[in-house]
Image (cartoon, rainbow, N blue to C red; front, top):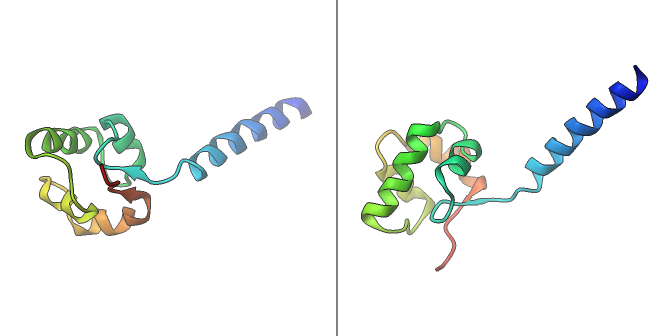
Length: 89
């Protein structure tokens, strides 16, 4: 029983530490799966819409450009701003 609790605690700490050290997501290079799991308020459909927007119109110039994607507004952007980046290419 005691070893089982230690193992569970270890697994939880591992996953929590992985998410803490993951770092910001580049919205110009991340795939839909990464976007949907990294951006709060973004599901699979909106993540696919972000990828499709990039394919159609080219890379985003700023994080605020995410608002050009249907269904993504300023609240979602502001809520996730610290986790999003647009790296120079």
